[in-house]
Image (cartoon, rainbow, N blue to C red; front, side, top):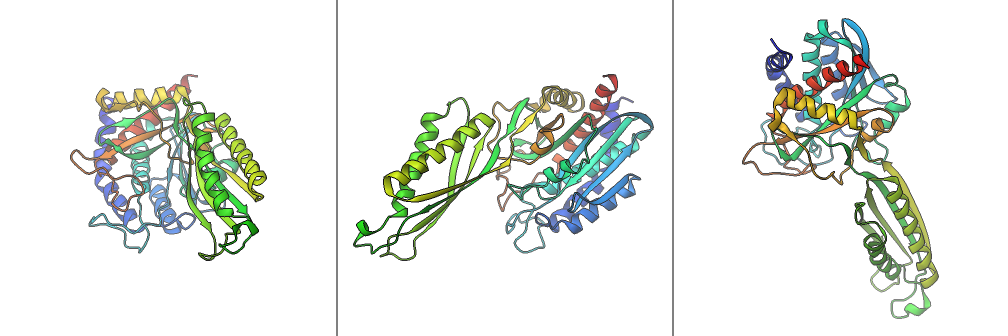
Length: 399
């Protein structure tokens, strides 16, 4: 029997349990840094497989588990996130969230189920494994701009690993396919807060005050012009202000406006340029209007950038296990962000997109109250990640 057939058969063996596990997790979502019950459930699953399990890692609810192969060799890692979102579910699923105002709207329930499924298959293949597999169950991925990956990396839990891998369900891709890119996969995500202070006055006598609202309106227009005119059009960048607060009453000149938004880029040079342009525009506005402006530019998740060797290996693993038709090479990265970048800043690795929409189904985006990953993607994800982990061990054993 070939390795491809073994992985397929073992996946089918564990699939009923994995589907039930995913549904259980989906019914009981927990928000960032509240994943106590979720972590305990995953730890129990991993302990039952005979792994060396650590709980409450890196000062949070993180879980790690080590599968030691029967033969010495390198260590590679597989990571899942665990947290849900503050969304009221409206999917109509029989296993919909039972917790008011909380939902696995970003597919982390599927990610966890796939990790446990992959661990189960690899546990059965342990006698032939040369090396070790480290499974990481990470809290707080949705807790931008802090996240949960940085704490795990800082704690040294992955020190010595040859590579780290992860995936994300991707509703824009059909079930049965997997997207693999070399280089940038997802954007850096920065948190931008701007405070513009003026001076209040009667609305009928604006010349006696300093109108922070007018200055803010000028800033919003100017900064968008700056993005389109001063950033290389071949270097994608998005700056969006989704929140603006100012003023106390309709007939009083606003003495303060607070804007809050996000900046998305793929490289540090563009990131640095935009931050400088924002500061320069604010300085000019202060001279023009007499305002006093403050910029808080918080660097959040870095861009997710796959290393070439690991991305190529992932593509080969997809083809070898699932066939050429399963491999999709997305022409462009996404402007959404993921704190898996925290691992790839230090370790080699790859982050994949798992098709999660059945043919004919409506494509609801991630974070939608109607998003529900097609359960058929679980088998695809398990097979892909199992094949990739084994391919990575094989490659690093030869190095």
